[in-house]
Each structure stands twice: as C-alpha cells, then as structure tokens.
Picture 1 (cartoon, rainbow, N blue to C red):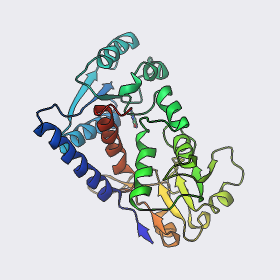
Picture 2: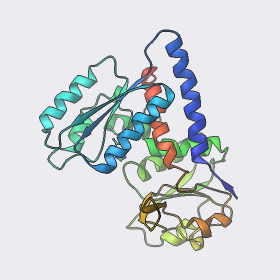
Picture 3: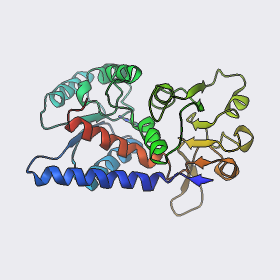
Length: 290
Ligand code: GUN
C-alpha cells in the first residue's frame, strides 16, 4: 500500500511555479496576478481566501483580495466584476462562495469573463471541459488528476466509481476520467443519494473517489483488494486537543488503507492540491492558454 502524499506533490508543483514566476520577473515582466473577491465575513471563506493569498506569495504571484461588506448589492458586485473583467493587470480571479443569500450565484458566475475564470465554474468553462477543449478545470478535480498523474497510476480501462455528484467535484471528475485522455479513459459509475446498491457498486471499483461529504462513510467492506482510493472529504471533528478539532475524510482510513494499492490521507491528500490547482490555472491565464 502506498500513501499518496498530496502535501509533497503540492509542494513540488509550487516549486515548479516559483521557478517559472522568477524567470518572468527576471525578464522584467509583471508576475501572474490572482484576485479573490470575498463578500461578507464567513470565517471559513476568510480562511480559504487568506490561504490563497499566502500560496500566491510562496510562488511569487501577485494577489489582491477585494473584501466587500456583507450587504453589498448584486448590482455593485456586478460592477466590480465588470471592472476586474476589463483590468489588464489581472490574469484570473475567483468569487469566493458561498455568497450572501440576496445575491444570485449563477448570475455572478455567469458574469465572470471565461478567460479569467480560474475556478472553472462558468458554464463556458464547464462546457469546454465536456468537449475536452482547453479550459480551466475546477480546482479539486484538477488536483485529483494531478495526484493520479504524478503518482503514475494507470487509469485507462479501469472502473472508476465516484461517490457524490456535486457540481464542483463529483460531476466534473466523472467527466474528466471518462474522457479519452491520460489520466482518463476510465469506465465511470457515479453513485449518489438515489443509488440503491452503493456498497456493492463501490466494491467493484478499481479507482474509488469518495466525494459525498459524509465523515468516515467508506468502510473496508466497500473496497476491493488493490483499489486506488481518493478521499475528497474534509470534516472538522471537535476534540480535546489544543486546536479543539481534528480533520477526517469520507473514508475510514485505518481499516481501508491496508486493502489499497494507493490511498490519499486526510489531511494531506487532496486538500493541499486544490489551492495549487488554482495557481496552475492562474499561470495558464497569464500565458493566455485558455
Ligand atoms: N468555496 C469553497 N470552495 C471554493 C472554491 O473552490 N472556489 C470558490 N470560489 N469558492 C469556494
């Protein structure tokens, strides 16, 4: 059994980006610039946005955070988006989700210039992904693809079972892995709340992607001997430690890991890859690859 070290792989990718960024600065050009728009004071969103800013610093990218009041109107937010869409000094940007209830999320995402949509959430970005055209892939599935590729895991012809059909993980990863690509070319089954015999289906997976958002849902009896298990779950469990919590995934790691050929731990598996994916997308945006 081999543990896929997401922290290590993320750190390697950051080093590669830092080298490229330094070369740009040495030439006298401006480095890639990522903007995050944060509306309101949701603590988790603030943490995410701060981590994105820190990651940009680490690789030598410029980052700007637009911090907006919780009562910012949809009209005002659309004006700010229009400004960023036309700002030649910004390569890519994200609007941190969730947005306050008075703002229509799909309207906001739809107003992002697809050329700067480094989250890959715009319908045009998702449509290009469906067609296999150059695009920004959403961060978490892109991170999973990187983990599979850099761990040299063969995917072609394998049966991949995805647990969960969310717009940001389950649905896009199922499309990416079924496409004729490497990694990809899998036979993909998507399981969700409407699936009747989920346990039996999970057990047929060569590659099992757990992204249903339920702590410790995947147990050893649901996993085939020799399977590759990718755990996308992140759950804070309160405890008596100094931090007051520890993080667990959707997979019962201790009992599942001995059956696997490869498995991602939580924390330190898929999690560290998501921000790195955003940085990779920002670099693509800088080079106008999309
Ligand atoms: N909120 C939680 N995850 C994400 C993400 O990947 N992008 C954005 N914009 N908001 C999020």
